Length: 282
Image (cartoon, rainbow, N blue to C red; front, side, top):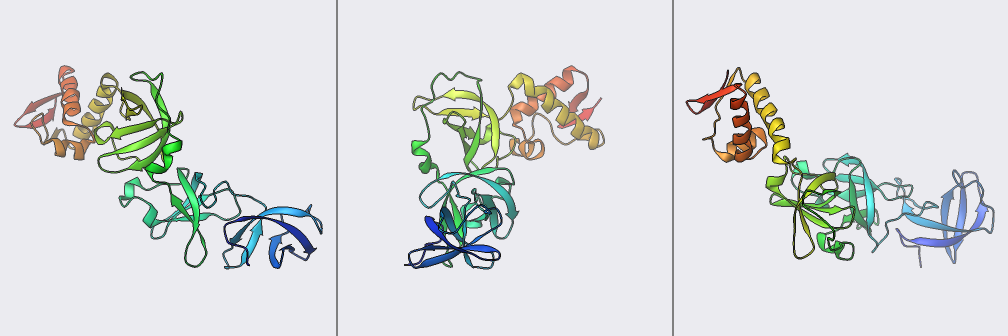
């Protein structure tokens, strides 16, 4: 019986050759590079991870991954190949592909390097290593009931699901937080680390989270954004408090109510005025 790819085995050093050790287990033999393993001797027992290298050759590594078949853990994104998927570090000598089929279809929501995904290990039809991303239901044993949480408390966590309706964040405390699409400036990436604030603690022990600052904090930022847009547009923009909410969100990445509050601030400061359903710089 051959050694299965993606598994961990205790093997014995049979002999030392020029560039590698030959390991054995029963009738199975596999090569282990000498580089990084210089202290091994013949007849030593060594624990190794079995995988296929880039030349499709079955080899061993003494770097034991923290992600294996049936076991989920966090893996950092190290590279993005647009037409193929992304590669993650699972703690061994080889970086493993997460195929596009496991990732959001919406480009902006796809992970970037340094994001982290909760994954498990599997094989493709050619016995090459792949990682599969955990569904939200996989986190059942990880998620905790939110306790001692107050409104506006700051929370940090990682995005574990995202779509047009909203995103789900797993906080550092293990709480499930939902981020409605109206409580973010842009859709967060799967695997992105985010910081938000609690806006609701629900009876089922989950929380609702906003990635936006509080109204009085973001009014100034929104006003600056609108005023900069007016300046860039030659002193007038075709938007007012009567404009379509979707047009407002598309142009300024803010709700219409936030837009109206920011315009009100600018008008109080005598920086702009509205006429003919347009906003003019004073």
